[in-house]
Length: 525
Image (tube, rainbow, N blue to C red; front, side, top):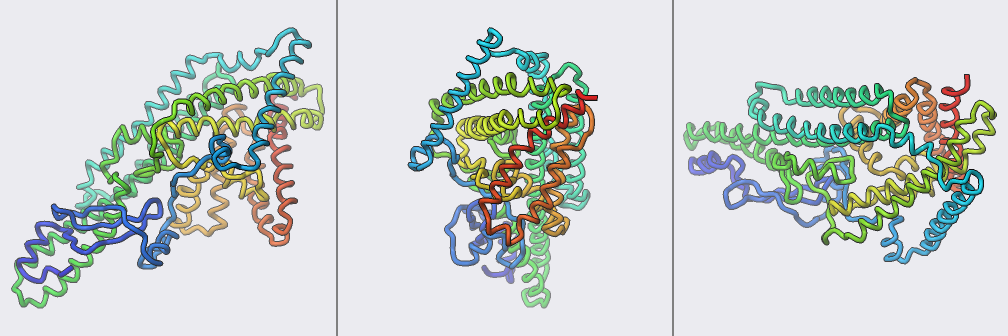
């Protein structure tokens, strides 16, 4: 690419501020390798390219072509769910027989509970939990609808930021003011949601817990959407600034004589601005989507339905259409699992928790070990196998790795990474990596901050349910931090079976321990 050293070249530079004949190549950490070339109209065009050499590999691992360290974003690709029956059959997984055995055991368990209840009380299923679940159910429904509609306010806010971009380019407003507006808006929205559910006297623990968890999940979605688009806005503003500077240089070159000594300096600056604009604009596109064209209500609605808590310009999609039979299968599975969970809580957990005043702490704990483990496994399956896969099928979302083999975890940080990948990906991008790249935290401090924030949100749920602060869940969550550093000790890594046994011991005792602790503080004087 030649510099605009003559008057004719200057006119070209003035007509198209970023006139690029050479190709710019970039590998985005959160997407495919892209290249930018000059289009027919003289503007930059971004398209997918082929990987080349070590530079592409280096950038994919978080290093820019100039050696800069960048924050590694989340990568989405077509991946199946580990326990999805279609995947087990297709891959001929040798353990798929145990999958069948588990569900046959659940069916036998379900049948035994019904028979026991009929002999003991003359009814198949108790109704105590049902009364709690459906009390003021219509109010919960209206509140959920209002919550979902309120989410679209972030789209209007982002559209407003894009509309006033000229003020940022001209320096009339600091571009960082959008971060202040973002955090104030999100904090206000979340405070309203929590205040509303906290003041609902007629809501049971099921309704309060459901609304609180939904509010937290939607807060994460909003934060990721606004953070991502605000970052794109910063880059888009830089591109416009570089273009304006290039136009100014082109205008200055017109006024100079061909042999003016200032031409070389201005040509060099023009080239630098071109390179920077070219490099930055590449990051504004992914696939067929380019910022700010993505800031629409339809795009945000699609993002709300996608089972991911982190936003991308484009997600990986399945090539085929939606499979109706697959959706029906997941709905039937979810309904059956909900029935088993209901019966477990109604007949094995409620009786123990309602009689805490006549039992010792150890007696209550031992009675709840198995019921809580059954509920935990079934809730995990219904969320990540049924609900997430159902929404993934509706949106044709291809990356269905919502969890890894967390049951093989030997440390609690491994479990935190594997059992709930949507939340893990959010914390990785917006808490852990952001604290390191923006606030220069060490890895240890970033780990502590991540667990601290997660613990606060967990305790917030218990605060809404119990209407008082006990800090039991917060304390157990934060205890994982020293356990993580201890588990990284080389001598412990030699015994993975011991680590896995310790992990499962914690999973068995943790949930019932918390349930007894919180309920005894409410029931037992």
